[in-house]
Amino acid sequence: MSLLWENSFGVFLLVTVFVGGGAAWMSGRGIALTWRPTMQIFMYMLLLAAFVRFLHFALYEGTLLSLHYYLVDLVVLLIFGYVGHRFTRTKQMTSQYHWLYEKVSPFSWREKKSS
Image (cartoon, rainbow, N blue to C red; front, top):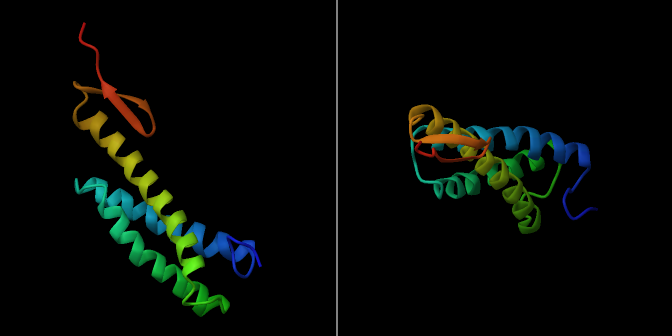
């Protein structure tokens, strides 16, 4: 058994990263699109991590009530949720306030320099 995945790396990749990570990305995106605070990502990911743990249990006979694997899933989902939120918020800030901000990277912006 590994510290990160319970059954196999493929199951971890499929359930936690692809299914859970995709849902986390969309949750972070939804939070950004509705201008909600970043802290709400944490609340949603607590619930989503429980659901991902249930998928591991129901589909691949994983452990349902494992704090260790729940926390691993939670960390992965928090990363995906935050990145999705930040990516969307950067796009929002630079398109809606294009006269104030410019994109620095896919995840950050800065004030435009006045000439």
